[in-house]
Image 1: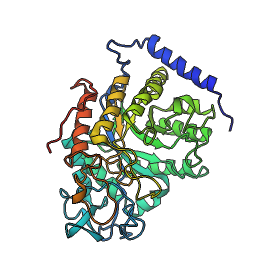
Image 2 (image 1 turned 90 degrees about the vertical axis):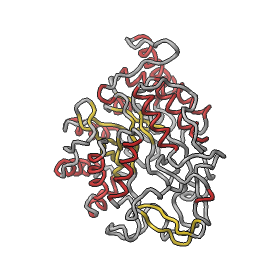
Image 3 (image 1 turned 135 degrees about the vertical axis):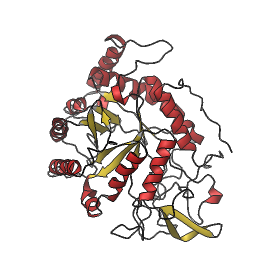
Image 4 (image 1 turned 180 degrees about the horizontal axis):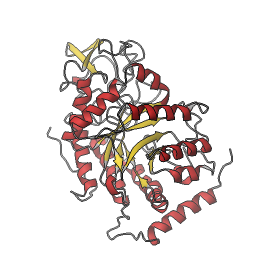
Length: 429
């Protein structure tokens, strides 16, 4: 693959930033950047939703543990770090963990297959003002999901309808086979339409068009869709079906650098997207690094999308830890800092000019990015084993702390509150 030289990369950034400052997008006073015009997407706060947890006895056809552990759960085989608070879940949602206990009592996790679980999660979204979810649909898992009757997606649809939230399908193209992925996507889109998902009153539309997410375009790692001609073909086909294509791109998409392929042909692919959603998880790890990201990525990215007449959806995450999944990685790898890290990202995105945002993720306890209710204290998590709890950084926080902060993020993006670097809440305990 031919690399683009850094002179060209820097020139693209400079031209985009010039457009922001001169081409009808004058910077407002008080140091805030031009506000992108999002239409019906203005103020939108979405979460990524994995929905992939299964356990024996939950009614799923495999009747087995999935994504909680590598095999049968033991302290040595767990595949999650963040320990969820299941106390508010229906008994049909909960799965008892073997070999561990909490103060001598059973320890539980949850099944995403149970309708009650998804209903509760969407009830929380409604309670805390989150607009809805991007349901992750892994391209190589579609046959298995269909064998399950697409129960989780069915439950997402009904729960979104019940709680007046929105949902959209976001395909994860990790591991996609380049010779079959286009046909797979075409077939599945037709299936989603025929099954009534896209026509649901809860299905997310942006400016009159149903949204379809494509995560995994242009990463330079060889594990995603790396052929620009194929990617452009996919985008154009979905747009011909009347959809708005939301592209999950590398963080370095705008400069064709870092985690993005350097092939200059990808500039046209990225420019063809209706909504650009760069992946940021793990790209910075401190407040100072998040601030640098605002300057190096958020501002020029926004300028470029505005010049391309696209929408821009930054991704923010509360922290990161996948020690149980990858033991060679440190525990609590990117600390949450009691919510300061999460809030700073949201503040930076809003003041840079973004009018909508994606939170990664709602239920991703494997990588420790989940914002759902989590256990507050390590003493209330199972023993033995490593578990990440909300007191990991020395702060005593309620189990719904990151849902509370998400509610404040929604208010900031809706314009109900003025952006401030200061964390807007103090914990009750």
